[in-house]
Amino acid sequence: MSAEQPTPRDLLAGATLGVLATLKADGTPQLSPVQPHYDRVAEEIVISTTAATAKARNLLRDPRAALEVTSPDGLSWATAEGTASVVGPGEDPHGPEVEALVRYYRAAAGEHPDWDEYRAVMVAERRVLITLAVRRVYGRSIG
Image (cartoon, rainbow, N blue to C red; front, side, top):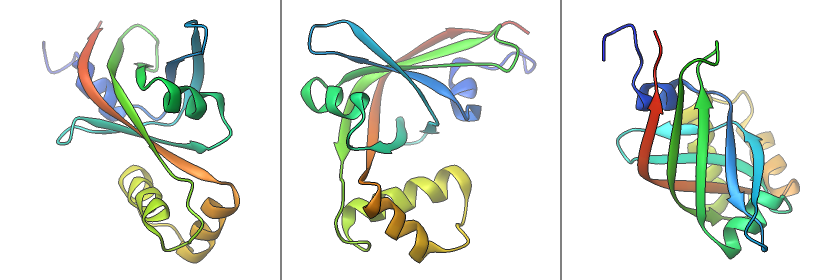
């Protein structure tokens, strides 16, 4: 692909919004808009959500998932498929579950202006971290 055409992994790395597909108990897909962060080195996508969401509950029952992202014009797209794990929620603002959310935030957005506040909110909201171990990436780039 030319420098003007992003690869599917380029699209994943640049995405700030995507659609996560998980499976409901009856096998039908459940789609959720999410703010993913793709780690090319680890081949993982991380997503923060609350423990009560359908996507978190679905993944605890069946870890298969896919994430789709598109270019701003919608002409290029990438899909990542894999198996997800869910960590959290944490009860201790300095426990390992919240530390995982801190690492996610730092990787996706940089430094937070008030880490104590962030940690307290993660506990209060019962936040969990979804980690999608990417098995396959495919897509189409139109430049």
